[in-house]
Amino acid sequence: MSDPKIAPAEISVRQIATLQKGRSQWRMAWDRYRRNRTAVFGLVLLLILILVVLCAPILATHDPNVIDYSYVRKPPNAQHIFGTDNIGRDVYSRVLWGGRDSLRVGMVAVFISVFGGVLLGMFSAYVGGIVDTIIQRFVDLTFAFPTILLLLSIVAALGPNLTTVLVAIGISGIPGYSRLMRGSVLQALNTDYVLAARLMGARDGRILFLHIFPNVMSPMIIYGTLGLSGGIMMTAGLSYLGLGAQPPAPEWGAMLNLGRTFLQSAPWMSIYPGLAVFIAVLSINLIGDGLRDAFDPKNF
Amino acid sequence: MLTYIIRRLLSLIPVLLGISFLVFAIGKVTPGDPVQMMLGSRATPEDIVRLRTQLHLDDPLLVQYGKYVWEILHGNLGRSYRGQTPVLQEIISRAPASLELGTAAFLFSILIGLPSGVIAARYHNRFVDNAIMLIALGWLSLPEFWLAILIVIIFGVQLKWIPVTGGEGLSSLIAPAFCLGIAPAAVLARLTRSSVLEVLQEDYIRTARAKGLREILINFRHILRNAMIPIVTYLGLLFAGLIGGAVFIESVFARPGLGRFAILAINARDMPQIQGIVLLGAALYVVMNLVVDILYSVIDPRIHYS
Image (cartoon, rainbow over all chains, first blue to last red; front, side, top):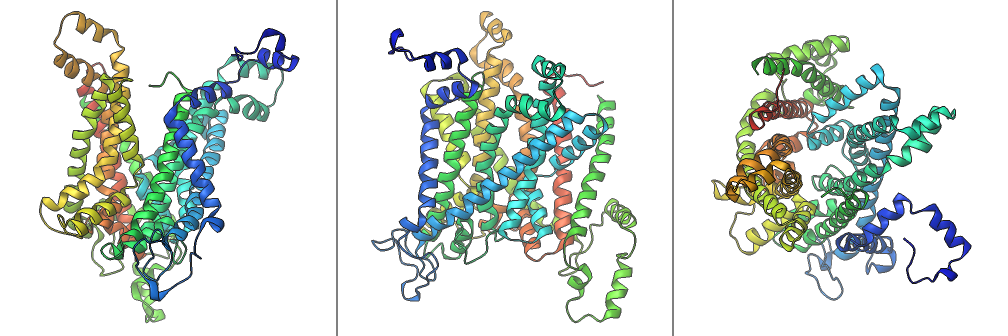
C-alpha cells in the first residue's frame, strides 16, 4: 500500500507507476519480515558478525599466529580479552580471523548444495520419465544414510581437510534440495503461466529459468538459509573432530579441537570459539524462521 | 497388513543392495592401497601379490562387489586393518554403549519436546508459546559439541559433579544424554506444535468440545493421536540417528560407542571399519523407516495398506 501521509497531489508520475505495478511478492515478504522483531534481530546479529569477521585485520589486537611461550594459557585480561592459548596466541584475534574459514566454508558448501539441487531437481522434473525415476531412486538411496555418516564417509574417501569438508557438506545437501526443487517444478509445470509461455513458443530453457524458477525460489531460499546454519555448525563440528581445518589455521572448530586438551587449565580456549559458532548459527536460524513466516504466512 | 509388511520387506532388498553398493564404492574410490595398509611398509612384493589374490583385489569390480555382498549376507564385514579383528565383532562390542546413550537421549527428548510442543500450541501466539519457541530455537542453534564442552567445564572441572571423561554407571549417562537429546527435543517441540495446531483446526475437535468431553480426553485421544503422524516419522529417524550418529557427544565424553569408533576408524583410515559402521548405520535407518510406516496404521486406523 502507498504511504497514507502522502497527499494525492504530491504523488508523482513515478510513484503512480510503482503503485500500478503493485507490490511484488518479494516486497510483501520483506514487509512481513521486518515486522518480525526476532527475525530483524537475527539479521542485525548476522550483519554485525560478518562485519566483525571481515574487519578482523582492523579489530584484531594481535597477530593470530604469533606464538609467545612466555605468556601461555593466561585468562582473559586487558591485553588479551579472551585470554591466550597453550602457545601464547591471542584467542580473541584468532576467533576474529577464524570466522573467515568457518563462515566461508559454510556458505560455499550451501551454495553448492542449493545450486546442484536446483539444477538436478529442475532437470529431473522437466525431463521426467525413466531419467526422473533413476535420479529419484538415487536420491532415496542417499536419504537412507544418516547425514553425519554420509559426511564421514565422504571425508574418509577424500581425506580429512577443510576443502574435503566443504565438498562433503556441499554434495551431501544436493539430494534434499533437488527433491524440494523437483516437487515445486512439477507443481509449476501444471500452471497456466507455463502453458501460456509454451503457447507463445518459449523454449524449454526460457520456461525453466525465466518463468518457473522465479516462482519456485522462495522454498529454496528458506531451506537454503536453514541449511546454512547447519553447514556452519557441521564445518565447525568436523574440524572439532580433527577432520576439517588443520592447525595452525585459526578456524572455530579447530580451535575447539585444540582447546579440548586444556579444559581444566584454559577453558577460555574452548568457550569463545564455540560462542562464535553459536551466534552465527542462532542468527541464521532466526533469519530462516523469519523468512519462512514472511514467504508463507499460512505457516504457523 | 501382513502382506503389506512382507511387500515392504521385499522392497528393502533393492535399497539395501544400493546402500551396500555405495559403501563398496567408497572403499574403491579411497586413495591408498589396502594391501599396503594391512602389511605395512616392510612387506615383500611376494607378500603383496599373495594377499591381493587372497582378497580377490584383482578380480573385475562387479565380481568383487558380488563377493562383498555375499560376505555381508554371511555376517562377515571384513577384518579391520588394525588388529585384524572381524569388524562385525568390533561393532557389536561397542553397540551397548551407544544403545544406552541413544535410548536415554531419545527418551529425554520425547519427555521434554512433546509436552513443550503441546503446551506451545495450546497457548498459540501467547507469551508461553513465544517463549517456548524462542528457547527451542536457541537450543537448536547450540552446537552439541560446544554444549558438551561447556557442561564438562562447568560440571566437571569447576563443580566436580561429573567425571571429566568416561565414568561408569547411570549417573555418567545424564550429562551426555542431555547434550545429545536437547536439540532433538527442540526440533520435536517445534514439530509437535505445528502438527497440533493443524489438528486443532479440524471439525472433529470442535465436535468433541461441543459434546462436552473433558479437556484431558480431547488432548490425548483427539488431538495428540491425530498429530502423531509427522512426529512418529521424525522419532523413527531420530532414534536411528542417535544410535549411530552420536559422534560429537561420544567424542567429548570419551564414551566407547559407535560414533567414537567411526572417528577412530577415519583417523586410522581403516576402510573396513568405516564401511562396516556406515553400512550398519544406513541399514538401521532404513529398518526404522519401515517400522515407522507400519506404526502409521496402528496410530491412524484410517490408513489402509493394500
